[in-house]
Image 1 (cartoon, rainbow, N blue to C red):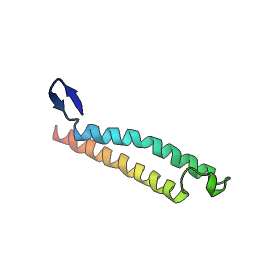
Image 2: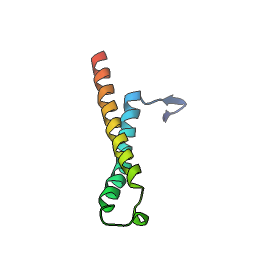
Image 3: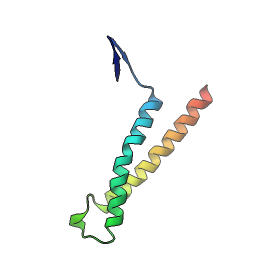
Image 4: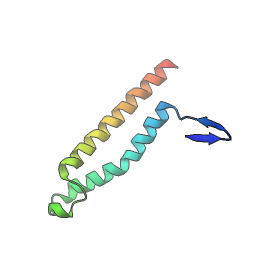
Length: 78
């Protein structure tokens, strides 16, 4: 939330979804490195379970798709 004086401005749902998609990129980076490292390193050296990494990447893809659909919906309303 952005507070200006005593007023509080809430970000739009589109902006919140955009921020979530952007921040989720860090998890995707860890997931990608885990999947690559899993080819050569034992499980105890991985930063996350490879199945969790696959799920993270799938969720990130779904999140970006939801953002695109929400953007198209918002643009159609204007």
